[in-house]
Amino acid sequence: MRYGFFLSGEFPELARLEILNLLPSYSEFKVILEEPRILIVESEVLPEEFFSRLALTREAFIHLESLDLDGIWAVFSQITDKFTGKRVCVRVKKLDKRYKIKSPELERELGAILWREGAKIDLKNPQKMVKVYISEKCHVGVLRHVTDTRQFLERRPDLKPFFKPGALKPRFGRALVNLSGIRDGILLDPMCGTGTILIEAGLIGLDFCGIEAFRKVAYGCVLNLEFYGLPLNVLIGDVRRIPFKDETVDGIVTDYPYLRSSKSLGELESLYEKSLVEIYRVLKSGKKAVLISNRDLDDSLKEFNFKIETKLQQEVHRSLSRKIYVLKK
Image (cartoon, rainbow, N blue to C red; front, side, top):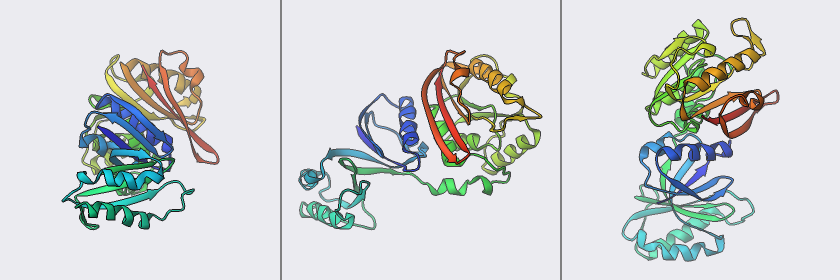
């Protein structure tokens, strides 16, 4: 089966990596084509669970063809047998401004081809929606999934019972969970703060545990988990002394504090040094840790047998950029 993914324009590189890190937990796969906002892969049939987890994918589709725009009319003539007798509509998304063609006009032309061959055009309640994405190439497919982005707005940090400035946005937190590739077992956030990562993990059915050093914040995290009907799996503790046995968690996702130091945690250099020892110790072999920091961790990570699979940088605002590390033990 070939699947196509239309990626969010907000952070397309992270959107691409979210898919590629999550896919191995569901199927062997091969990348067929990559463009800035389009990814085509070949895999086994993927369950709805996979698609519903995605945060930074706008749409997913069953891939039919990728070709130059000049050939789109001929391709529609060749695929008409797939839609004979069905209620269909055609939708065109133009991602490359170099093309002067107007999407509504092309939709009508392509829909007419399907209609002449026996399809029933239904713009309000189609059984099949044929999608055309005009990018570097023209990609044709049948819509498989549309991500509900409204859910992430409804879980904005400031709408939760307990809020602290600087909390991760839910959509970003969900993508980070998926970067870990975890499908079964326990996800640990050893600096869980207000609980964005734990909430996003819990809402997609994962088992999780959080650790938070500050009592007030830990209780606030519990309030947020309770608000969403999730298990209250939060410990008051220290990431430098994680109270778990060696190799007992299946994934770690955590966001480091961005201060230079704090009275409770001490100098951040010590925090990083000791926390990385603990993160490496409790993570199972072959599993992944996703670490977010405003610091470059390359030198600190040299002491461990972590493989740096990915390093990304996200500009948050002028004075803050996040480094995102995907590490495999």
